Length: 502
Image (cartoon, rainbow, N blue to C red; front, side):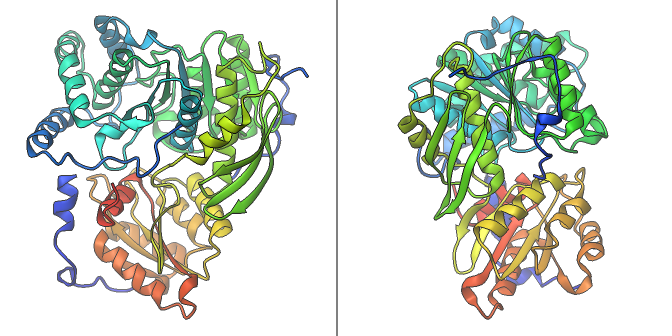
């Protein structure tokens, strides 16, 4: 195992910068269920969608004060599994979440990318959208979006101040104060009602049944691929996890299911039967007809609920993003009633324009060339396998060096094992989050997976990235070298700051 380099060899401004800032199962034809199936008879902004800190010092100070107040609450990893407090907040706010229809998204991986695609499609059809996703890459304001763009710092602060008295009222009544995530959820629902939006696209924070977002009545419920993650809270099998996530399926809703492990699919379909929900399943009612790698992304033909959509350019890499696109398209078709009330397709040119404008920061995102440096927020083995597949397909590096920092509650060994076949070496490091895995502990796991000669330890992320670039540049065929920075959304956010993205 290589020794750490002297931290004094690199600039000291990183801490200041930070402070200022699938393996899919076979076709589901094996599943038999009594639920009805949905079968037809017969735009997002360009540029970097991640906001920077406000340039106005006073505005930045005000935003920091809000962030500080929110940080005094339970963090996103401390939960009391109920929707009692968020329901109480919605009640005193006048139930803003009922002022608009919603598309609700759960699953283990792919939720945020799918949400962004749904948002882009709805926007292209001239609907005003609100999108709520988590966690954020760099700025807390990016969690709440209107019309495809994060709300401004001013609006974020105003929304917080507007609901703060009601938050304090609920705090005083309940056994526990509202958590960080619950307050943000309340802010999102209030902001959407105030806009007002035509439709909200809402990603769960964790699970489904008792997630704070689950006070909406999503007319469309989307379940992206389920795998093992948060097993201490959601269950130790994909079936148990599916049971928690199925809680977003409401009475009479339309359910869009990505390809799932068989046991998870059985649970989800059983819930759909109980809720008299209509189901559309990837690989049966909708899916990918064809896919080919293209410059800057991939070219798709998708089969939706109403028919085929060809020549769709998706500027994102990896087979999993094509699956996300198929799910997003089906969700939007279902929202418009296609497959149930209408036997038609959406306007294909509008669909093409929407997908061509999709961006998903921190998902196989290129931030540098020569050598190529890519950021990806894979944080569990399922996501890492999908990322490894996407990297191999889209880039074909002859030498790839990994930079990895994980969160302490994640399966670091499983993630590293997924990347081992594609990494020549791995540089283990730490991100700025207090929950980051201890570097020495992560290094010990990496040595177990990669062997001592393929592991480098750099406690600070700037040093780790520089070391990885140096290792990549040792490749004789200079153009064939690359660096992948991964392991956590926090790692990606820190790296984006270093590369001055956003």
